[in-house]
Length: 396
Ligand code: CTP
Image (cartoon, rainbow, N blue to C red; front, top):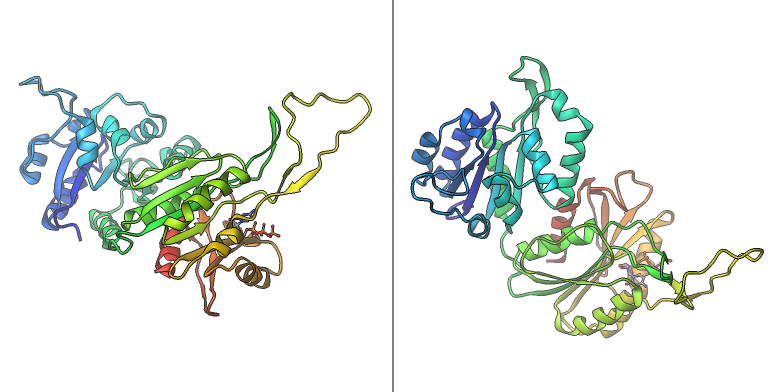
């Protein structure tokens, strides 16, 4: 699976850097082409000579070559890579990645990379458990990076706890599994909706919901990785799509999302309606800020928004696949099945708000997929990236 793959191995300054030599050997043995980038403090732990001998390429560390003045292009490296692995990733490098502190070649390359990024943290147990590190890791996850969790055991400090870098074999396994998924959506066009919609009341207020867009974005990344050309119609979210095959169209209201979707749908093979579309919008939008009334409480009259999924269900032609989502709190199965029929969907993905860790804002989800032919598939609680893989597998 790794044969011919272009992999950037980023090494930062931690004791576990010695394990990266073995990781490099395993990657080369598996047939990958590896470019090592090491931070200045990484070189305190392991020498570039060892790494260039094993990788067969000069190791990059500085922005310029000290001998020739040649500029090392982080942009070119970022585009060259099929994957980037940062192992070990110290607390400091994790913080720099999370906040864009681009003060060395590795972080600038990370910021330029279009490829998926795998991060294997390694540090002392208290540093790893510190809320600062945990928040930075959560931030990196929310940007679509893959975190390869450290394991528990004896650390360099002789303390025992979680913070040991994952073993090189297990990092290679993760990468192999990632590339194992074939390009089974090559040539397919997909439409995915994601995030909430905002229904404007006046210039400063709206009706919205807590959707983070994470599930829809994870689906877009997975589909693009498997070869699809994805148009992602997205409500207002704080995350960004990474894969170059994803075209993002930003919208705010349900009406705007509807207009884009009905235009795009005739040209796609598969559509997944993942957005949490507001069912109602204020009948009137005030051009000026509504002032606090002295006595009266303002009444906002709502009108129905168009049902995007149902409209596409009516437009659907032979060979097109339309998949919806249902987020339910009660009578989950009946409600989901009913929605699938009403909207003429081919499948519906149910997540129940009764499962903690499922639904809005979380990084995990637990879903059941119902198919129009009466079949159903239940899945365990998983990361949204893994759920996206299950959903795409089910569609295929
Ligand atoms: N959906 C849509 N347009 C809407 C409302 C919902 O495209 N105006 C889509 C969602 O993206 C999802 C599916 O329809 O794929 C079900 O959404 P949900 O909000 O659960 O269903 P509703 O039809 O709004 O029903 P209810 O709010 O009564 O549960």
